Structures are given as C-alpha cells and as structure tokens.
Image 1 (tube, rainbow, N blue to C red):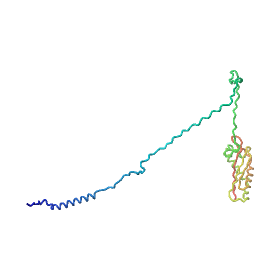
Image 2: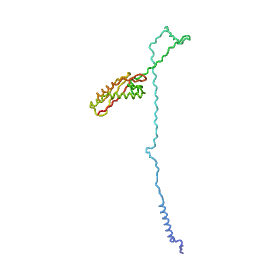
Image 3: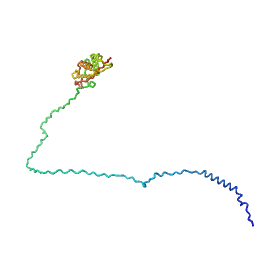
Length: 242
C-alpha cells in the first residue's frame, strides 16, 4: 500500500513565502541595528588615590605654660650685735604749744594787703610792621595811623632820592641793569637813627647808603602800649645803571 502525499503538505509551495519572511526579518534586524544608539561611558571622579594607606589625623600641638615662681622674700635684717639698755631716769622737756585762738576782748589788727601788680614785659625792639604807634616823621603828625604810615614811607623815599649820589654807580663800572641796596636801621626810644646796616653790590655804594640814612632827621619815637620803644625799619634802594 503506497502512502500518498497531501499536496498541501508540500513545503515547496511556501518557498516564496519563506523567502519574503526571511527578507522582512533581515531588513528588520538591519533597521534595528542602525537605529540603536550608544553612549560614552562616563566614570565619576573618585578623587586622588592615597598610597600612604590611612589618612593621618591632624594633631594640635599645645604647650603647657611653665608657672613662674615668685622671687624669694628678702632676708630679714641682721639683729644688732649690741643692745644698749637706757635707764628711764632722764627728764624729758615737754614742748608747750601756744594756742592761736584770740580772746574775745583782744583787738585784732589786720594789716592792709597790697596787691602786687607784675610789670608787663615790653619788647624794646619792635619791627615796623607790627608796632602799635609808628615813629612820626617830621611833617606827618596829623592824620590816622594809616595816613601817618603812608606819609612816613613817602618822606623817607623822597629824602633818600634827594640825598643819594646816583652817579656813583656809573663811575664804579657796574654792569648795566637795575641794582638794589638793602638798608636796615633802628629808630631808638629818643627818635634817633642808630645801628645802620647796608648791603650793596659795591663797598662804596654801601658806604653811600649808610651816609644818606645818617642824614635822616630826628623823629618822634614809636610806642608800644604807650611806652617809647626802638623800631626796626628796612629800606630797599633801587637805581638803574645804564
């Protein structure tokens, strides 16, 4: 008896179907592998490795203060070698203190108390710029202090210009230009001119300036707090050498 095959059981009839399924599966695998995403592996920082084993604990070094011993007390003074015994037979004179209390009937005389006033020190040598009452040049007696001061300077300048020998500078062979002579003198308590000092570019000009200042007239002395005092005065003399 022969076994008959069922035509539906023949697998060759499904060859095309298997090929299509295999192709679809292969395409699916390829697609999945293409779409698959990978990420870089990140390893967290674990810190610096210590090769010395266990970490050393920090130790705080403390010092114990050494107590300061107080200095030893000074030794007691030595005992006297000889003890002198004094007999209590000497008579001691008692000091009697007199009382300062006064009797009610006794008259008390109070001396007059005179208050001493210290003499105010006045400087004998005062600069012209700070003197209270400036020296008065003859002819400048009237006017206020400012007017007297302006008159004083004007009279001094006129006197010097009139008396000074200006041609002397040309005879000395000085270089051309403006020259100056600085003169300083004092007007003392009597109004006289004293202690004349001059500084000039030539000794002959210095002597000429001193000579001219000596010809100044006697003035009314300056006063400081109502008292005549010496007054210092500086005078520049300018002239032109051609």
